[in-house]
Amino acid sequence: MPPTDDRPSPRTVVVSAVDRWGRDMVAYLGRWESHVEQRHPELDEHFDVVDLALRDPEVITLDAVHPNRENFYRRGALPPPYDRLYLKVCMAMGGRSPRGLPTTGEVVTAYPTPRVGRGEAQKWP
Picture 1 (spheres, helix red, strand yellow):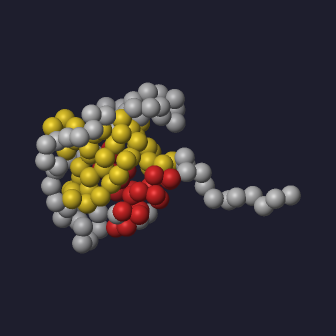
Picture 2 (cartoon, helix red, strand yellow):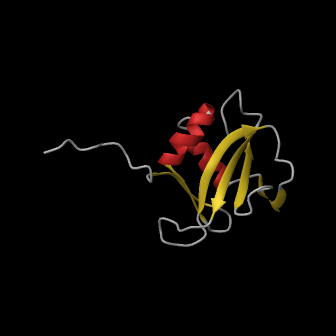
């Protein structure tokens, strides 16, 4: 019998949150490992701060470049030395949630930034 691969699937959900409008928001392991951790190692294993930014953001904007994306910002979510910065979580909106509901947001990237992105239209508050 061949050995089994105990590695989790790239579609394993590592963050699952519901935003202020009741939309399901998810981060998948494959995207997290291949993009977030690779490009932003300060977020390695910090699933909890992404969850916090999605559930309780300070600002939500419409992306300046991609019409299907929204950006969630939360200041002070990351540990020092990043605690004075915003955590920006970029979400691709659309698709289906693990519960089969439409309007799921999927994490595209997350990283610390000193300010809300230029050219982004404020959606909330």
